[in-house]
Image 1 (cartoon, rainbow, N blue to C red):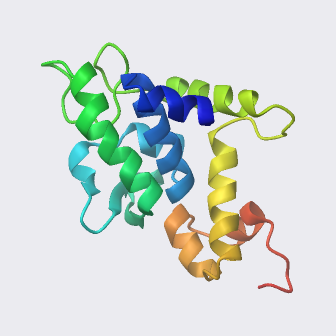
Image 2: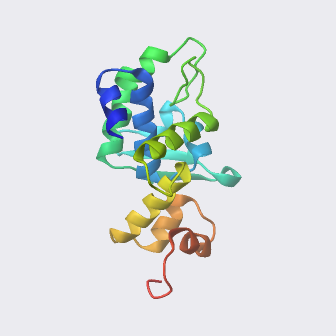
Amino acid sequence: FETLSAAAAEGDALAVRDRALVELLYATGIRVGELAGLDVDDLDQDRRTLRVLGKGNKERTVPYGLPAALAVDDWLRRGRPAVVRTDSGPALFLGMRGRRIDQRQVRAVTAALFEALGDTSASGPHALRHSAATHLLDGGADLRSVQEILGHSSLATTQLYTHVSVDRL
């Protein structure tokens, strides 16, 4: 992550994007497809929330913290303008050709990040989703709130997903 942050600090537009998307994935626990589908107007930067279209076209509002807000703001100020094209449309995250980023690109970014970390069992964006949920619970969030943030229809899914013990429930 330090290498990515250093490249972003130097103004590499794609590194700025990658840092923002990783921060947002971790901060929100949203799915890769949900991230790729975000438009600029899905952000409420004042309230630090995202409007996310989840499975079954269910819409939910997901909060995110200051590190993600700073990274996304940097992307919008310095990164996105460097790659945007006239036909880019409203997509929040763009590839190097100015089109909406696709899920494969997001998976490649996170896989490279985890590979650079070395000895870890984590390998992709789903690990960030698990971490986000676990850290929310460890920080005192209740399971129902985490269920809503993740967009799970079943509390049992959230329990399995976050490895919550029956005692904790």
